[in-house]
Image (cartoon, rainbow over the protein chains, first blue to last red):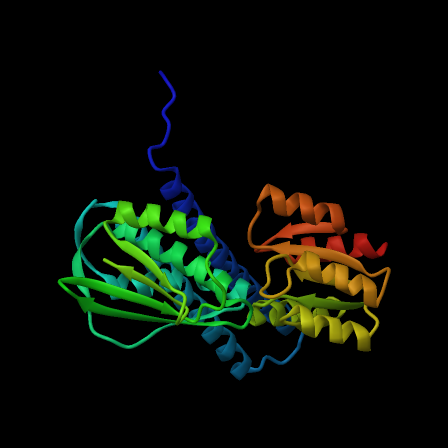
Length: 209
Length: 117
């Protein structure tokens, strides 16, 4: 049996990067549930030794566990949506929805880079596209935009229908994107059937789908 | 024994501190590297438990900063990941490296070992 070389290593790396971020978030959720359950166990052991249990404290702990279960459920829902984005090479996509998902998946990265990312209000922006490659393009674009924005930077994302497709603007860049970063984005944009441009006058990264 | 816990997940670190206090440790907690540095300037801790991946300042960077403030503190690293890179970096610079979720008994054992108790 001969070895096979993945056709799209970039895509695999992106999949791995997002999966790693998700696993990190889930580990934190489990760690918190583990400690809260441990606290309940501690209280039970102390109660068995005669210490008085505070019902309000138990209710608060139960609420905290439920909150973490809800958080974990949200992370897994996003993970599931992301995993299914490879199901079809081309289908009808809502670019606003994809953008919101990518922002959510990159929460940890934004937090690590100390950048706030917000999606501005707007309508659905639908069109035909490759959901996975589109997500990769948005994610890579946001990663470079975060680096450009720098610590305590704020990125605002505008998504709107335009000419039968969609226009996505990322504002808040503070430094020009490196040439190799732009070349990488152009390469992914090409695969996604999109165009990418940077307007240095207003520090905006633009995608046209 | 005075212990400082540092993790950006406040719910995790607050519960852990309380559980350690039940086991006889004087445990305090903060959620960022900057807060940790302030705490260590004001108090003398025997050991710090640091999350490896935190915004602004990683556990490894924080350890280097804390060393400048108070040399000789002991360290245990906690991480949600378990990557080889993390382990190598953590194990080389700390008394021990644990992967979340951690068993309290194991953490207590590692703290005792690090402090020579």
